[in-house]
Length: 232
Image (cartoon, rainbow, N blue to C red; front, side):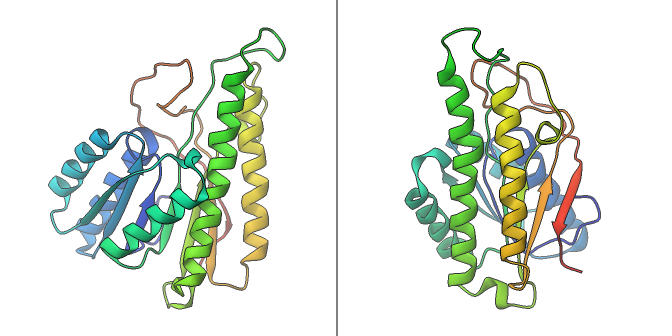
């Protein structure tokens, strides 16, 4: 997202580690450097890690408003809507939603064993959880007239190069990201006249820290941005 215009407020899922964590800090640094107002809603399952991130953000930019909310995107759309509304009450209008929460399954050949539950978890989180988050975000944006303001609104979906390339033994992850790409493209068509920008981010290498059967250390993310439609 290098060079992108900084929004005044963000709602980030999966912010407890990895890309979500790094983005929250990057937004704080840019707002500090521009002496611009910034409000961040950071969400994830691990509230303790979110509190650590909040402290790190405030160390970078003490003027930043930071709201911490525990959220499991697989808990259902009602839970997601409640979380968004609670953040709105705490920090005001939310202009940009960074839909980042995701998992990765242990590398597995299709049909090799009986551990399909891991693959189901990936689809439930990366695709259905993301779809529910985007749906709730768009509903919030329209219901509160965020897209009617001069700044408009922005949905950022965290996909992967795995949504465009094939990786052996990574079927569920590839499927989840390929389907997500299509979903966000449909969203861009549906909102093309609604002042809602849609961007797909495709990291080149990182896997989420919250991984099924994996234990990965934190990393510095690399981005491949693929805007479907963005504000001028």
